[in-house]
Every structure is written in C-alpha cells, then in structure tokens.
Amino acid sequence: MDQKDPMEGFALDGNSGIPVWIQVKNRIAYLIGCGSYQDGDQLPTVRRLAVDLGISYNTVNRAYMDLEREGYISTRKGRGTFVLARNSIGCARADSGAIDLLVDDMIKACSAAGMADDDIVALVEQRLDFRKFGH
Image 1 (cartoon, rainbow, N blue to C red):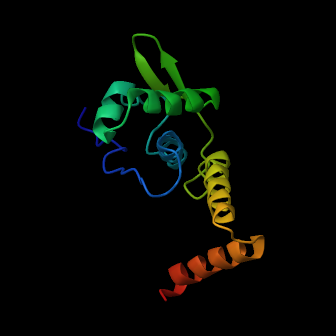
Image 2 (cartoon, rainbow, N blue to C red; image 1 turned 135 degrees about the vertical axis):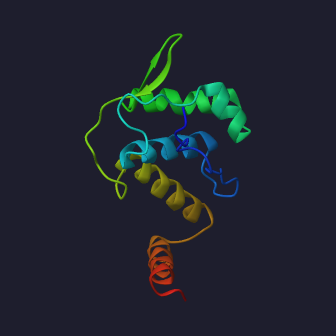
C-alpha cells in the first residue's frame, strides 16, 4: 500500500475544548466527505490510529463506533473497518452533523465564559473578517 494515509499529519488540539474522540470522528467524517477516503477503503485499525495519535484505544473506538452508527463506516470482525458508499457531499459541508457539533461546542464554551449570544455572533463575524481581510 503505497498510498498516503489521509490521517497523516492530523494533529489533535488539546486546547480546543472539543473532546478528542469528537475531533477524531470529525476528521474522519471530513475525509470521507471530501473523498480522501473512498467507498471500500480500509481505515487504520483502532489500535494503530490510537498509537499514531498518542491517545487511548477506547477514544478511537468511541469515534469509530459513532461513525459506524451514522453510516460512514462498517467494521467486519477480523477483517477491519471500511468506508461505506456515500453520496459525494463535498468538503465544505462534509458532514453537517460534525460541523453542527463543532459549532455547538463553541457556543457552549462561549456561554460558559459569560458571553451573550450577540457577543458570540460578533466574535464569529470578527473572525470571518480577520480570515477574509487578514486584520
């Protein structure tokens, strides 16, 4: 298998406030949505991915179980975990559920920090402007 592993270079963000298993799940869902993982591709084993990312086997297993429940992957005992056929949905909205989780987590973190809803919206607009205009 000379093909580059789509998970290569993926780094977890310990400061994001997003649980590690959700970061792993979201990354894999994104890679499937973008076509980096195709129908029938075999994912890294739970153990291998846990070692590669330096996290618990149980953390990766939780992400895989959720991805399987949502219809992204299928695990075959003794054979591995494989990507299921999905409609191409593109990178921008690879998985609205995964993106919704990220936004929900951000809103919870902002609310927990004492921000009002209007301030959260202003912060997002400010960050979008920064991305767009670089200042």
